[in-house]
Picture 1 (tube, rainbow, N blue to C red):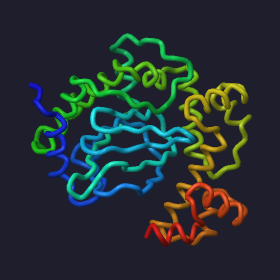
Picture 2 (cartoon, one colour):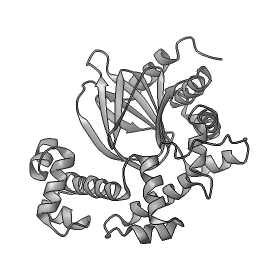
Picture 3 (cartoon, helix red, strand yellow):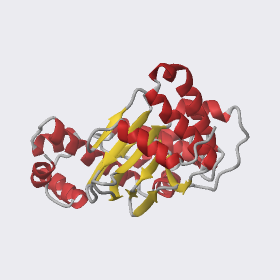
Picture 4 (spheres, rainbow, N blue to C red):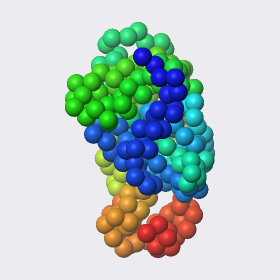
Length: 292
């Protein structure tokens, strides 16, 4: 039975299950909640495939030169592992930004492929999209969130509702592009394979010919499809992965600047500092000190 005000109910549940400004895991392993009471802070992250919904306030996600803005009434889908910049654009202490993220598991997509008819996707559909949330999608999300207040029902019901949400996404406007990622032999699937390889080998020198051979494409075809889908080149993708990881090592593991740069594949400290400053807006030492 559908609730009269799905966003009000979702906001109430998220507010009860978050404490202060935080992003937190839940008893449902693929579900994450967020609460932010101020705007402006940029969060640099390697984003996994997910469905994200803002139930109060607004956010934006930056990928390359593209900025995707979304608020109440919209949902965001990220179909590949991507280095992104996330920002809260509407929030206050009285009305904090409240939202959720649901991890999209590859196995769930492949399972769904065998049970529904697939509409051909536009060639090189982008890996990030914002669309309007349908009543059926919101109804499923509300029921998933309600399980947080009924933890005994989570093992039996959460997987079923997650499959329903995935079905709603797959049959929505972005569905064909999302499913194409899981279809073997498509350019999007080969880009996904390239991203997986880069994620496991980002500290190694990148040779496009080797990567193209690994995914069964020509170097020119890989470069074209990779940029069309992700909005950045394989080289830019690797660089951002390296810098995100170096920043994490300095912030959480207290590595010094030289060690962090060397750990992610930089041989030149000056090149590392220069590229770090270009991405984050200030040199490594100042950025890490300010973030701490």
